Image (cartoon, rainbow, N blue to C red; front, side, top):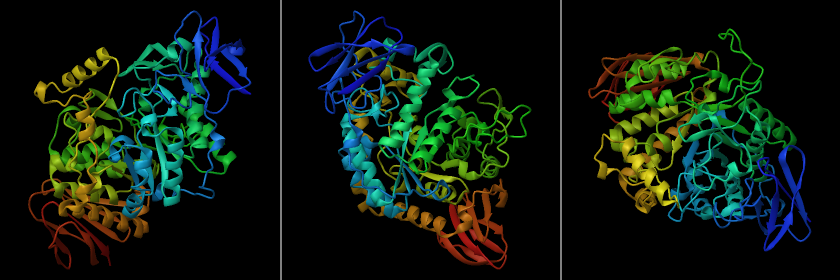
Length: 584
């Protein structure tokens, strides 16, 4: 006996199809329809028939879509998997090295099983957490995953539900925690049938991807339940150690209890139930510290403060933008607000560069001060899927700035007080770009996506922009692991390994207290000095040797370039060089 349920307040009748048989469903409270089928269970295919519509619709909460987002759903019994990760405990965020990857391009075959083969490499590099770009079902054969429509079902091309569980089990066996990127701010345009069932979307608010999720209007209780239950499923049934929440600034929620606060409460309760620790990491460009302030704690700088939203950490774009603009000289789009060493220093010491000051790019005052929050509530990175993939040619930092600057940037990211995050292939200066790619089955939608991409980058030659709907864009984005046999790629990989080893070996480099950070700089000579406990960290972003007065030091721990000449109170640091010393 299997019980089927679906929330469909918009219809007057609802039927269930299991295999070739149809069953009437009973309407319960608040638009929920139910039916029980005696001979249905794990592996049974089913769909819903709504009113007089003869088209069978997949379950919005389908846990298994073996034939894609337009096909019928399949019953999945999560208890059938025999987990092997008993007693598993992830490293805390304060000690984390996060590695973001895209399953489809991480290995040649682009599957969960293929990714398992690279886990020992990641562990050997020093990675502690693997962060997967979205793996929920999306239309077509390839895509980033942010246009998902059946959010409970792992993408079948990647291997489906069982292969994902095996991947998580293998990560834990290797000593790697696993985070999952989830998208709760919109649905993709292709294969989204939720509108036939209920008011998941509101037309009163909009996002860059269409209508906003209904978090505050009629029916919003069940919509919020849909997304909270989804988060709890990934943590409970797939043993993920945490979630990365995409673009939370796109939520429009004026409820007394914000959706993020509700989500953090429910995740904390699940943690207590299971005796496992979970983390929630947000992507937010609001520069609002309330997102990562614990629930019930107030920011006294606010005249009225209902307390924090309880998210554990967030991505820190101001650090990335400051460093990227400094290294490349780019000043278009949001980079126009950045470019000085002073701004980079502010991002290190204060997290938000724009913390209540005027932004030329935005045309308004933006952000508010972080105050006394730990730096461990912020992720620092020099590359991620957005900052590479949203560029017209998907070019990586070392292509734009060169290997010496890329190594210098890596050294700042790893030695900064934030939680460091690496994007796949960054650690060996992968030659493959990371392009935007999609495979929409609707030809009109595919054409619109291709044309939209070209218009977005209209400053480039129209025919030079890679077509996101072509298989070539997807194939070009796959990592070429054979490059690790080449000297320059091995050199960069070893540099990352040395940096990670240094970070892990020095307690002061794991300190998230920004009050213990001492930073000095010279804008004209383009050098930066950062003191973290007994460790002295020097960076020369200039094209000439920098003469830097320093306190007494013991010995050179690591450098990106030799020779580094030293006198008792002065260090002569070559151009585009990083060096770390012990302080006497």
